[in-house]
Amino acid sequence: MHVQTHIMSGWCVANCFALTPRERVFCMVAASIADVDGLGIVRGPLSSAYLDYHHVLAHSLPFGLIACAVLTIFSTHRIKALVLFLALFHLHLLLDYFGSGPGWDIFYLWPVSHFRIPNSYSWEFYSIQNISFAFLLFLWTLLIAVRAGRTPLEILMPNLDRQIVELLRKWLTRSGKAPADGAESTKPN
Ligand SMILES: [Zn+2]
Image 1 (cartoon, rainbow, N blue to C red):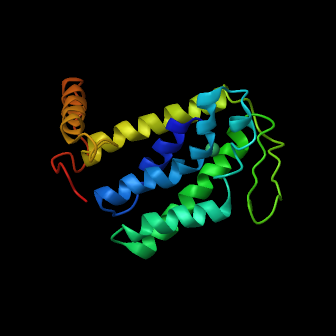
Image 2: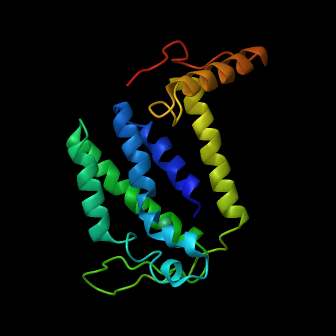
């Protein structure tokens, strides 16, 4: 599935829990970091760096455990964060199982084993299912911005984050829709 969809999945799930801003960023990282093994695409979509290693190097349990453990070390609520990061890492694998397109098996135990999970029930990468799911997550992201007063940019670009929130709330007010619960509180953790 598309990287931006994975990132939004991490953001939306993170906002269902009481976390710090940094932990919310880490949730987005946990939900998308598996695709680091797809960076070989810069050498071309038909390059061996991409075809041989995407869904192999980082779409595996050993990589997930290491990545989530590192993120947990820098988190405040460590037990909750570790469980959440691991769940989001596996949500990535689940979304890829269906949404990566045919032929992208997952080597879940690499490098310990070459056991592979064939994605026999996948739909096409550029499909209505993937687009719809991304659209739903985008709407959810907008809802979070209006209700909780934050966007995925809250740490990286705080000024732009505030401007987007204000713009959305103004637009809703002009449209005659009252801001939702918590609209007055700008930055709850
Ligand atoms: Zn992936």
